[in-house]
Image 1 (cartoon, helix red, strand yellow):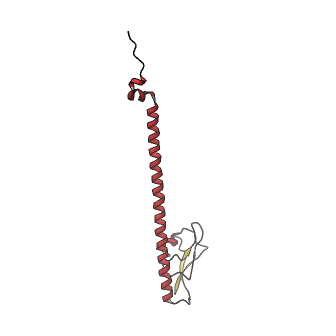
Image 2 (cartoon, rainbow, N blue to C red):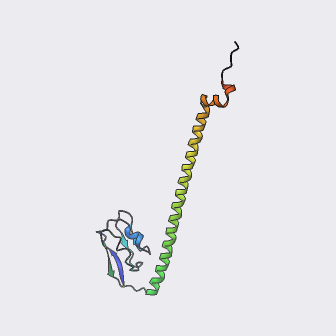
Image 3 (spheres, rainbow, N blue to C red):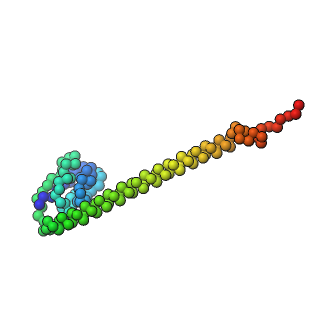
Length: 140
């Protein structure tokens, strides 16, 4: 069976192959070289096309694991990957919601501060309370 192999000396660490692998059989992080977990690779070739430096190739690999066992392992890893990605999406949504909430709070706080400053100014006080803030009329 053929499996993906990354020529690590050529890898630029772009992470394009990480997101392409449906079973998370590639490890690494941004700006660092990546490697394939050979026992987990299903040979789907989805990681080859996104690689900008063509450092991924398929090599023949002998494995003592049966095709049925490999398929069962792949299903488990695919399910785990989907759960991880869903969790990441939910986390990002929560972060965006919190940021949006904080922005709303800061806009409201700024509006209240402007209103308070305007209310405390003498000009506004004279408009609202002309009797208490205006000077008494003199009797001539």
